[in-house]
View 1 (tube, rainbow, N blue to C red):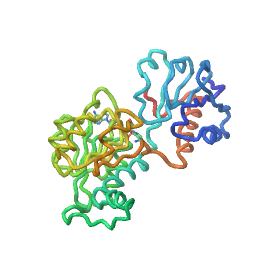
View 2: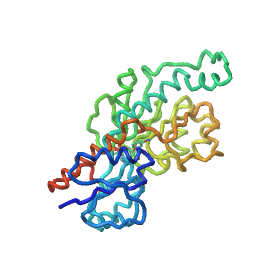
View 3: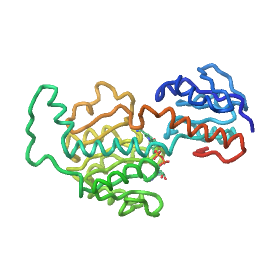
View 4: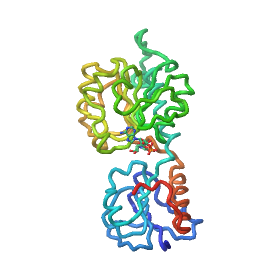
Amino acid sequence: ADIERLCVHESVENVVPTEAFVEAFDDLDVPAELVGDGEGYAESDAVVSFRPRPEFLDAGWVHCARAGYDEFDTDAYEAAGVPLTNSSGIHGETVGELAVNYMLSFARLLHVYRDHQHDADWYDPDYERPFTVGGERLCVVGLGTLGRGIAERADALGMEVVGVRRSDESVPGVSRIYDPEDLHEAIADARFVAIAVPHTPATEGMFGAPEFRRMRDDAYLLNVARGPIVNEDALVDALDAGDIAGAGLDVFETEPLPEDSPLWDFEEVIISPHKGSATNRYHLDIADLVSENVGRYLAGEDLRNRVA
Ligand code: NAD
C-alpha cells in the first residue's frame, strides 16, 4: 500500500498547535498537509484527526489523535475495510501525574489553601482533615496505559493499590486484581477510586448511585477517562448526601462543563478542563506514533494501536 498524502485534519487544534504538529512530519517521505472540512479523500490518503468525519471512510487509513476513540464508528471502519488507529500508549505519565496530583491535594489540602489564598486568608483547617496518601488504598478501574501509569505512581507513594481488570494477570504495583463483576467489592474499602477504562457500552454509567453508596463516605472518585462512565447527576447527589467525600474530575458528560453545573461549587471537587494529557510536547508524542505507523503502513506491516 502507498500513501501520497498525510492529511492532518484541522480538528487536531483541540489538542496540539496545528502548525508545529504538521512540521513534526517534516522528516517523513510522505508530505503532510493541513486539511479542513469539505476535503475529498482517496485510498492513497492517510488522515490524522481529533474528530470523526464520514468522508474519512474514503481514505486508506485513519488515525484518531486521542486515546479514546468512542466518537469514531468502528463498525463503519470495519465495514469499509479502512484501518483505524488511536493514540493510546502515550498518556501513562501525564494522566498518571494528574491523578496523583488530585490525591495529594485531597490529602494535603492544597486546593483548599489555594481557594483561601484568593482572600489572603491564613486558613486553619480542622485537625481531622489533612492526611497522607501513604498507606491509603487506591482502586484503579481499568489497567491499560492510564491505569498502569496511575498505579505505578501511587505505589511509589506508598499507597496500597488494587485494580479492576478483565484478566487476572498481575500488574506492577498492583497488589490485588478484581474481576469487573466484583466492582462493588473492589471499591468498598478504597480511599480513592480512579476510573481508567474506555467509554464503551459496558462502561457507560458504570459509576452511579449504587457504586457511590458502596464507596466509603471518606472516599474520593477520580475520573480521568471519559465523562459518560459516571452518572453525573448521581455523583452530585452523592456529594450532597455525603456518600463520598469528593471527586477529581478531568472529564464530563458535557464538555466544556456547563457554567450552571453544581460540580463547580463543591470545595471537595477539583475540576480540570480535560487537560490530563496536555504537555508542551504532546504534538511530538502523537507525531512519533503516527510516523511509526506510516513506516509500518508503507512496509505492509501491522499497524500499532489498530482499533478497527
Ligand atoms: P488502554 O486501551 O491502554 O486501556 C484501557 C484498559 O481498560 C484496557 O486494559 C482494557 O482492557 C480495559 N477495559 C476496557 N473495558 C473494561 C471493563 N469493562 N472493565 C475493566 N477494564 C476494562 O487505554 P488508555 O490509554 O489507558 O486510556 C483509557 C481511556 O482513558 C481512553 O479510552 C480515553 O477515553 C481516556 N483518556 C483520557 C485522557 C485525558 O486526557 N483525560 C487521556 C487519555 C485517555
